[in-house]
Amino acid sequence: MAARKRSSHKVVKHVPPRRSPTPRGVDREAPEHAARGRRTLSAAVCSFELDPLTYLRGLVRDIPDFPRPGILFKDITPLVGDARGLNIAIDALAERFVGHGLDAVVAIESRGFIFGGALAARLNARFVPVRKAGKLPYVIDRVSYALEYGSAEIEMHRDALRTGARVVIVDDLLATGGTAGAAAALVERQGATVLAHAFVIELGFLGGRARLAPTPVVSLLRYE
Image (cartoon, rainbow, N blue to C red; front, side, top):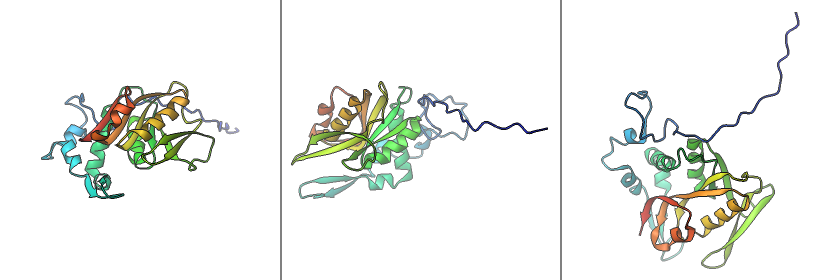
């Protein structure tokens, strides 16, 4: 009897946006009888003497006069190098977007990729990179934006987002909001909607939040 040949055609199923966090994420409404192996943010940080955001703040290192004199640089490498700190940051961001039907996380080069990729994985969303000019290989959309001295350009693949997609734009730090605003222009050019901007650090004294209004801004650590 001849063996039946299996079809080589694979059915690709659409995976919807996550409506609850991954096992490493945050679930404030988890019942007390949840599986013992599951760890939420509240459970994971219960042993800390500090609250989670104070713990994060302690991992941000100040570097005076970098990259030029008069600038106090907020160095996040100790934060991303700390396993607890990195997971607290990703959990705290993910908590704010669970259940909002997020389709994609748009992350800005380069440190935004660290948080954007992890956040997309937690939320079961697509990851879309926004890169500096000349770094993307396919057909692109490009936006120019003003800097303190001169201008810069960022790009996104033209087929990155579908019309009507709901996205959050992620970067490590919000300063004046110029780069994030340009990223929002790229998103909107493709017919998608920016639900919010999300940052680990916000330099409130530079006014970036006002520049991005009326789009909501989420930041974990704010410096005035």
